[in-house]
Amino acid sequence: MAVIRRMPRYFRYVDELYQNGTARISSGALAAKMGLTASQVRQDFNCFGGFGQQGYGYNVENLRASIREILKLDNSHKAVLLGAGNLGRALMTNFNFAQSGFALTAAFDIKPELEGAQVAGVPVMAMSRLERYVAEENPDIAILTLPRHAAKEAADNLCRWGIRGIWNFTGVDLHLDGVAIPVENVHFSESLMTLSYLI
Image (cartoon, rainbow, N blue to C red; front, top):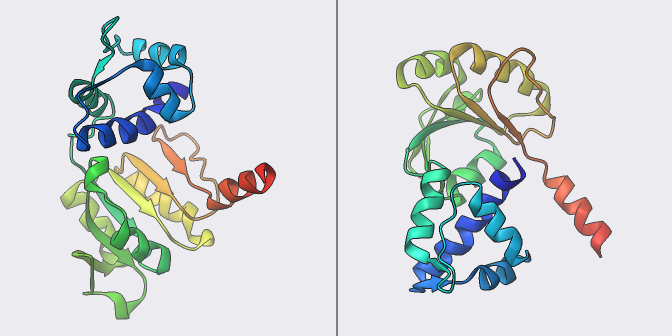
């Protein structure tokens, strides 16, 4: 799991190299960019069969394609967002879902005045339409930008309706008893507290 959590960072750096026209990179150079050791880079990639060639390094285009495949970024997963408030709108407007392998197809909110609006091309619907939408459109993940008190009930409902994963920004850790779906609990405060320690 530690290696899997590093793979998106590898992809970000390798994609940048690819976009800049770099043809190849050594494990040492990639490690230096990421603050790792060359040995760690090689070990991580060896978990998936290894992609380099001794004395040559890594072909950037091939490495990028391999990491995309590992992370299933070409699967075009469908996502819905619950909570079209400030944070929800910020994600819809500024986050590149497509680059991460997701298509954000709809947002849902309880405020009647938001129904029918579009944010960055994403339609906002009434929360009462969510169950039917999930049944008809089969989104893979739900992004929660709801108030804390609404998180658990929303997550339980989503699991019951067949959602396959949850990206949770509500500020409360979700642990879904007896449900084998992945939940990524995102806490901005933890990152900021870490920075507080480091400075």
